[in-house]
Image 1 (tube, helix red, strand yellow):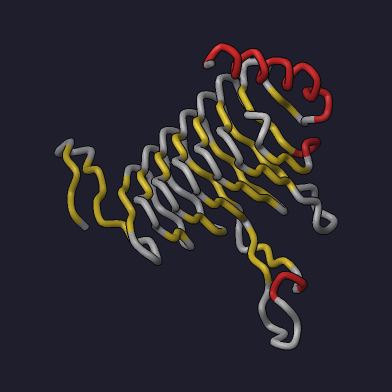
Image 2: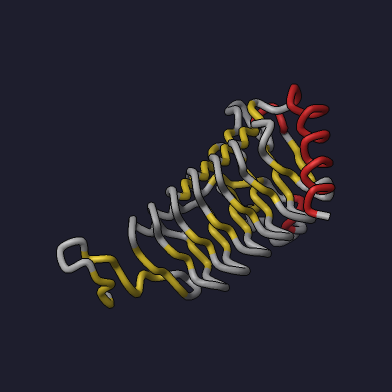
Amino acid sequence: MRYLRRILGLIYNILNAAFYKSLHHKAIIYYSVRVGGKKYLSIGKNTVVQRHGWLWALKYDDADPILEIGSNCAIGDFSHIVAIRSVRIDDDVLIANNVYISDNLHEYADIAMPVKNQPLIFKGAVKIGSGAWIGENACIIGASVGKNSVVGANAVVTSDIPDYCIAVGSPARVIKRFDATSKTWVKV
């Protein structure tokens, strides 16, 4: 079954590579993944986007969106990544199932209008540093996560997480940092 998925992934890449900004021939995007705005989307070597996810680079205004996923990344089932300006995921990032990553939100200023019909608001560029691990059901909205940092399950990240940190909660807050001098994790 694993080889069948790999073969189907290669066939998908061959047939669709011309529509992407960049799609490495060794990347695997499961056939059930919804992909929008392919011409703004780059996916690196050996990256796997698992079942029923959603990758969407939406041209919302005059700015061309950027949705870049580096090499050797694993993106879990049912994860959604949406960019109207900039979402960048560096190499070797592990993203669990049901994760939501976005650089935008719906406005909710007009109480007479359904939220889904209100305009999108750019919240901030998102960058997930190399080696980071994003736990199950986490949401990252308009914020960045540093290199080799961990975002715990169910966390909601709305402000930047530095390199070599562990962040949990809603809103997410750093609970540990790696101390390079003592080579240990220190509680914050």
